[in-house]
Amino acid sequence: MKLRRGLLIIGLLTPGLGLILALIGTVVYIAVSQSFGYYSLNGTNEFSTEFWSKMAGRKAFKRSIQYSIYIGVFSAIFSVALAYPLAIWLRKPFAGSNFIGAVLKAPLLVHGLVAAFLFINVISYHGILNQFMQWLGIWSEPRRLQNDPNAYGVLILQTWKNMPFALLLLTGAVQSISDDVLDAARDLGAGTWDRFRRIIAPLTVSGMQAAMVIIFIGAVADFSFQVIAGPTNKQSLSQLMVSFKGRGDWHSAAVVGVSLMMIALVGSAILAVVARMVMRGRIK
Amino acid sequence: MTVQRVNKILLIALLAVCAIWLIIPFTMAVLWSLVDPSEPWTADKVLPPVMSLFRWTDMWENSSLKSALIASYTLAPSAAILSLLLALPTSFALGRISFLGRELAKMLCLLPLVVPPFITAIFFTSLLFQIGLSSWRPGAILFAHSVLFMPFAIRILTVSFEQVRQDHIDAARDLGASHWARFKVAYLPALKPGIFATLLIVFIQSIEEFAIAFIVGSPDVVTIPTLLYSALGQDYVRPNAAVLSLILVVPNVLLMLILERLLRSANPTLSSGKG
Image 1 (cartoon, rainbow over the protein chains, first blue to last red):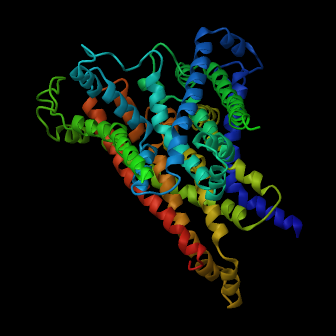
Image 2 (image 1 turned 30 degrees about the vertical axis):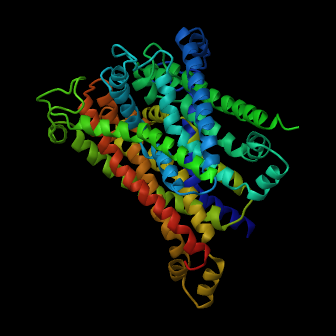
Image 3 (image 1 turned 135 degrees about the vertical axis):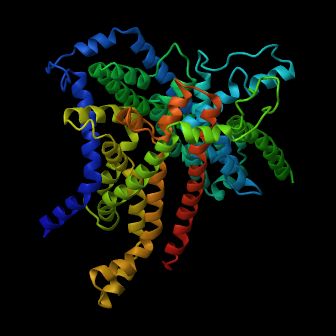
């Protein structure tokens, strides 16, 4: 009876969860194996750490790692920092709050590539922003804003696209705090900042962590924003991986891919812990 | 009341931000898509000097837009149906049977969402090469989309299965209903919104998916996102990119609004037991 039940459950899980595990498992397995020289598509097929050591010596690889982490961390921080005050403001419904919520969340519906186009269209050399600044007399001639070397464009795009997601998670968390708790704090003389720091922050920390981690993983692996709006002298890890694959160098692509997965994993763990410490550490 | 005044000021400030956030970018896109090639839109003019639908008809007739639309709009519904069918048994198990490790199973279902899309795309292609199926591009993309977007399907359908009321099933059984009849009267009404929501969300995700379609599909399969990507890259013509952006964004926004309606309308009837 027990065995039959177990078999039934496994049978039910196979087409869904089973396929997911099979596909993702194989993908990760092949990536790791190829980074160590296995599954070569042309010729040799043996264990080797050559691809790792060669990659570690490459300047472009180190720059990519730094650059991707920079984009990942700052996109997560900006999105969450912007979403917090908005979530608190929208905690209680008021006239027009639904509309504001809808407008703020609209970027969720806009495809990343479309967002990138809209952005470069606005900031391009003859774009509306340049025209506006010239019209105001602040800039005497149009400036080249696209593909800026510090990747501010990519950060703006990431924040535009991801802030609504953080807002979604944080609105849920903030709304679940009952009025009684906040009123009690107010009665005890806590100001706005104290209420945020001592009540809202600790009670919403898990929603905030989830938002941070998911946005970080997405942004650290960014490809399209980087290719379209990012600096031309730097490559993100995804971009580097795609360019290796394009040259047929699967092993190097695999080294970059595995590094990217490890960075996403370790980075999001560190980010989650740090976020918790920042939000909770101040409470005595 | 001061709170109301503060809200009003904030509201106005926010509407201004909104204009920058949404209205300006989209207006610019619409205007650029209407620029007639007979006279270029130079920096000294506020509006395009000559406006026409030339770009739209030109793109329709002389680019791979038509085949991209066909590819995207056959791929997406197929992926949606396949994903739904594959997700149903797992969701039934997760929603109606309690077993050891159920929470772990629920977590594992989310795996495709954590692995960066370009890693999945590249090493899935590598897998296709290893097993000699690399020329099987449309099928491979369909398979990958159905599996990778299954987390959404399983998530939604598990909740739907949880909401099926045991007393409805018992009542149907007591009245002597067969398996099929029990499914029809007790399960189906509670599952229906979830099924529609699943189909819609996988459809939208598949239409928008870029990494798999780009890496696995190139150069044979062109979908709307890959076409837009090349229009933004090597052959960047601003009005054409504007046309493609609008073609990609408008139907999806409408579908998303329907989805939100659907997910919202799903709950009250069910929790009140009127399902």
